[in-house]
Image (tube, one colour):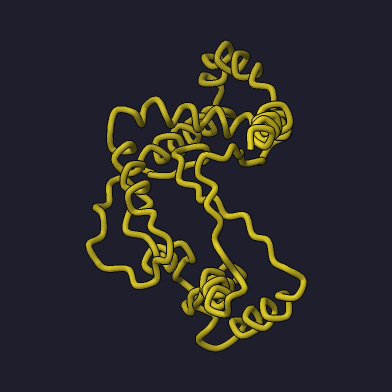
Length: 212
């Protein structure tokens, strides 16, 4: 019931998942590699991601998937379990786990999930589809940001995304884009990313600033 209510609040229908709404409004490349690329024009695409998404889609339909997806699995395991040494123990005891009726079903279910992930275009750690979106809003612009956000909490505005809010700020002359081409940057998701940012990216930025 909670899932159906959440779907209704986001998409307007209790059985319509949010990812379908997003795909039909913004995306041309489908989430599954067995589905062809849509030929229907998208009217709400403010960011041109088609070329990068197509590249990821084609990669997921090629032999590279059998290299990329296992790496995705390792990334997922590292995220949840940390050290991957336990995988070696799992491989060693796999025959015993398979012979046991208590663990055989779990292994079969895991294999099914792994096989199903092969048809997904994007998976955890898979593909480079990110956009560099770092937002900085001045204190004087916060009232307008709040106003535009509240305007989309009810009525037809509920079907709009935060892109529409940013578009309103752009039209009001409060929001601008900054070209960061050639400037070192990194995305921070994990503790090791912080060390990389401090040791590599920060040093590169300091060297670049010294040359200016």
